[in-house]
Amino acid sequence: MLFQFIVSMLSAVGFALVFQVPKKALLVSSLNAGVGWIIYKIVIYYTGSNYMGTFFSAFVISLISEICAKLFRHPSLIFIVPGVINLCPGEAIYDTMKNFVNNQFQNVILLLFKTVALAGAIAFGIILSSVFSSNMKNFKLRKTKRTNYLKIYKRRKK
Image (tube, rainbow, N blue to C red; front, top):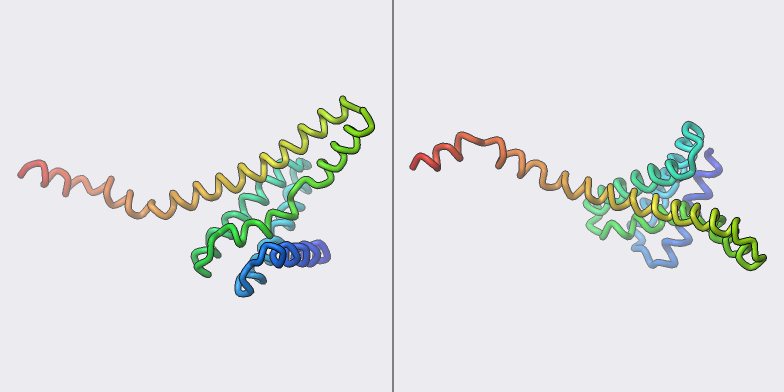
């Protein structure tokens, strides 16, 4: 697991350099990728599903990215892209194209479904995390406005 964590971090550093991530955020984005990969492996170990592993890993990576974006005052995309790049279904895409070239269309459809489902799990994890974090920003404000009925009642009496 430690070796996979380190390799995941190094690959994230490579992609972060390609996408020109600021140097302050380079270490954090690579740690985010390493944590995401470990979560991916743990979920696969317990559930046996690549889709669940991809979803939960993308969700946690995106959640950590939202927190880091607030701390470092950078866009969250700087932390999400290097973290999620290890989860991209490259093997499934390769197998799909290989079977397409070899005219094995039944395998193409199955592998295409797998590829789209893994990409959808990544997208759904990121979207769910960003919605969750945006709701948490406004939670304090909504709580005081909605539950303070005495002020509303006093205003109506006047």
